[in-house]
Length: 223
Image (cartoon, rainbow, N blue to C red):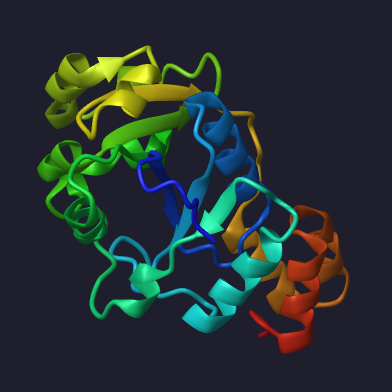
C-alpha cells in the first residue's frame, strides 16, 4: 500500500521483476535510505519497450512482488503499468502521476546502465520536466565517464549532490545514490528454473523464500 501522506515524495523503481529477487529489493532499500524517503514504489512493467515480453504473466509477477515485500516496510507496489494497454512507457506513467499532483516531488530511480541508455527511451527529453532522476551506482563507479554525447549537457546542468533538492522541488534534478553491488540476474534465475532440479535449487538463496516457493508451485519458467 502506498504512503498515506498525500504530499510525500514519490520514489519509483521500475522493472519487469521477472522474477523479483534480492538485488531488486536491496536496490530499492538502498535508494530509499539514500534519498531519505519513507517509501519506494516498485513499478512492474506490463509490456516493456526495450526487452522481450516477460516470461511470467502480469498476474504472476504482481503476486510475486506482493509476497516479496510482505516483511519489507518502506516498499510498496504501483501496478498502473500492468493495467494500462500498450507499451509501458515511463513517460506515460510520469504524465499520470504528475497530473494527479502537479507539485509533488517525483523521483525515478535508475541503474547506471539504464541512465546511460536514456537517449533510446520514448520522450526521454521530457523526463526531467516530469520527475527527478536518482542514478543508483556502485561507490567509485565512474559511470559518468561513458555517458552518450546526448546526455552530457543534461548531466552537467541538472546534477546535484544534495538529496534535499529532490525532496523540495517537483522535478528536474539528477542525483547519484550509492548502492551495494549485488550480482543477481533474473535471466540466469529463469534459466536455472528451466533446467530444474539442482539448477533450480542453486538460485534459491537469490529470492525471497515465498517467491521461490511460488515459482515452484506454479511451475513458472519451466522448460
